[in-house]
Image (cartoon, rainbow, N blue to C red):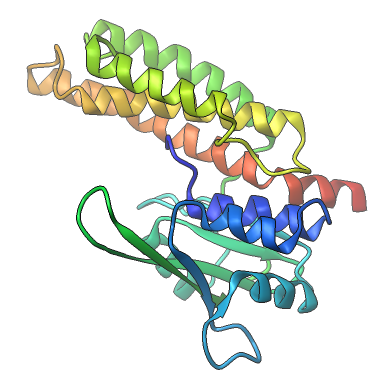
Length: 262
């Protein structure tokens, strides 16, 4: 939750490109990020994988007018609309991009090689058919913001009682690193997104930071099995709420376009 998912980068900067707010080269550079290379496989009319710039242009020519994110988890097909084959691939990858305006979806396949600290990452986005239907369980930005605020309050109270809230030097270092990334502006949405989407995504990541720190601190003060279950039960809905909000933020571009077209 702390880092931007690859599907988020592809959707956000792909939307900026479709809106004419980013050049093809700038969008491709932002999508690749720290990876070595991204390719797209399975595009209609292409017999081999192609680069991102060509792929985004081809998708636009095929009628794609926006890109949505899906971040599914077992039992929670968040952002998906089917068919089952696409949903299964997206669930395995834990993320996907669903096109708006044409019945395509993209699922990343990530290949990593090399020693720790010098990992070479290549990503192939597989283009698959999707069902054109409303995405599953994605809230509006307003709903997501309200749910996040409530989840943050509840989780903080419960985790504090269990003595597992983020504390100590490891937690402080993680918080400092998170703030440094935010200050550098590396973890914001692409041009064209409404300020509320940026705010919701930032809050979702802060909630995600709390969850990560709580999991990362071992058992903390929750030494009994009952206390450990209580912590897991407290974190599960918070994690789900943060993922829903994250998807709502990335999908805000398409949702605003749909509202404007009505």
